[in-house]
Amino acid sequence: MQENDRAQLHPSVPSAPIATKCPKRGKVRDREGNHLGKLRRGVWYDPDKNRRGAFVKEDGGVSFYAGEEGDNTRAGYVDRNNNIHTLTHEYVGTIVTARFPWLIIVCLLLAVVTALTCILCAWALSRSENADYAPIIFVTEGDETSWEDTEDLSVFYNQTFGDRVIVPGMSGAYRFRMQNQSPDPLEYSLTFSETNEYGISILYRLKRDGVYIAGEEDYVTAEELSRTDLTVEEESITLFELEWIWAHNDAVDTVAGENEAMYYLHINFLAQVQQDR
Image (cartoon, rainbow, N blue to C red):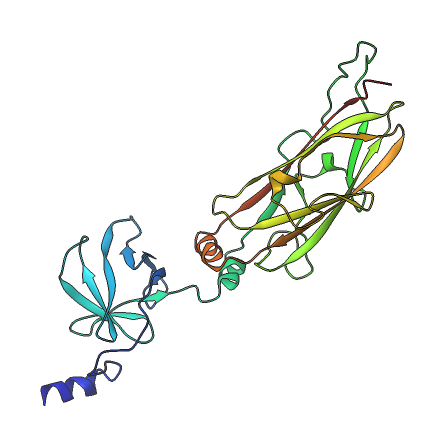
C-alpha cells in the first residue's frame, strides 16, 4: 500500500525498471537551465571538473552511482526523459544530450573562420644576383576585395549561415586571384595548414585557371593542398578556386559541437622573381 501511495504522489516514477538508454555524453542542467556539469563516457563531472558519479545500465534501467570510480553506492536513477532522481525520487537535474550534432554545432556557433597567418601577399627578394627589387603582387577575393583589407577571408561562406558557421555534410567553393604587376615572371609557393583541435574532417580541392592542381581524383587534407614551384607570367592574373567539403564523422562531430569547436584554415603566399629570366 505504501508503494501505491508513493506512485500516486510521484506519477512519473514507475514501479518497474525504466527502459532507457544509458547516457554517455551531454550536459547536466537543473529546471531553471543552470549548468550542473558535463557528462563524459557516462561519468558526471561538476563545473569544477570534480567527479560526482557515474551512470550504469542495469536491469532495464539506468542507475546513478555517486562518488569516485569503484564506489558501489547507488544514489539515484534516470527516468525516460533523462531526468536524474535520488532513490527517494527527488529531482536532481536533467541530462541534455546532443542527438543531432549539427544542430548543436549551429546553436553553439561553430565558427569556421579562415585566418591568414602571414602577411598577405608576402614576398621574398629573388635569389638571382640580378634581381634587385621585390615583386609586386595583389591577392583579392572574387569580389576584388584585397586580402590586405580583411582579417578573415570568406572561404566558408554559405547562403544558409553566412561566413561563420558550417555543418557536417556542407560543401562550397572560394575563389581568389593573384595579380602579378611585376615586369618579370614570378615563382611562388602556396601553403595551407589548419588549426583543428577536435579533428573534424574538412577536405579540399584546388583549381588554378580551371585546372585541378590538388585533389583532382578526390578531396585532400589542407596540408596536401600545398604547392611549390608555381609560376605566373609578368603583368598577368591567375585565378584560383578552393573547393571544400565537411565529411561526416558522427563521433568526432558530436564532440566538436559539445566543446564549441573552432576551426581555422591558414594560407601563406611566398613569391620571388623567376631566377632564369
